[in-house]
Image 1 (tube, rainbow, N blue to C red):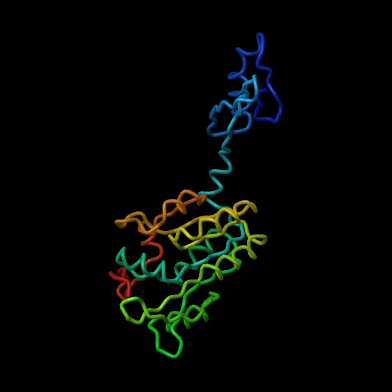
Image 2 (image 1 turned 120 degrees about the vertical axis):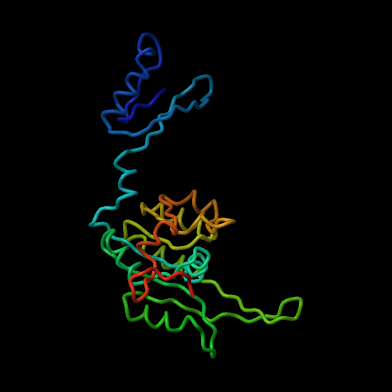
Length: 247
């Protein structure tokens, strides 16, 4: 039996059959729906028509969050750094923080990166600045190993730490903004969406190959290309011009 947009049913027999799509169109208009699509589902000897509805209000809220929305920012540091470097500009983390604040109430801004213990790292000045300027910096030591060629290698990612924090904050926020293109976060995005949280992912498809994993881009409620945000997030030099290359 077909289902109408208002949750009721429309009989698909006799003279009412000819009014079916007229009724659907009316319901769609009443509910301010942007699009609807017919799907046929076989159910024994009976066919059912299911109306797939997409709310115009919901779509608009994804693109333009309300000023009262609670937002959490998650930055995959190495991934964002690499993406900005590919695109040829530096990230200004003060401007980034302020841009996220403009979307609503910033509940937490978290930056994740692995660090080399007992050695000076070029990332250290940035970590110190972030610590004093509204970010929570989450770090862990890289692990050293020797590859099959005998060369010294370092490895370290923050996937687990970021995922745990995101799941804990999901109950307290309306939107999560994730700066990463790593497909490993696809399951995390799906999990917080099931809790009613919108997820905006920021990375790029402007590079070749694209930095963002296709499955992550598809899973996100909203995908924003970092290259289009350069004017808002790029670092500027003393003359007011945008810095030309990521360090």
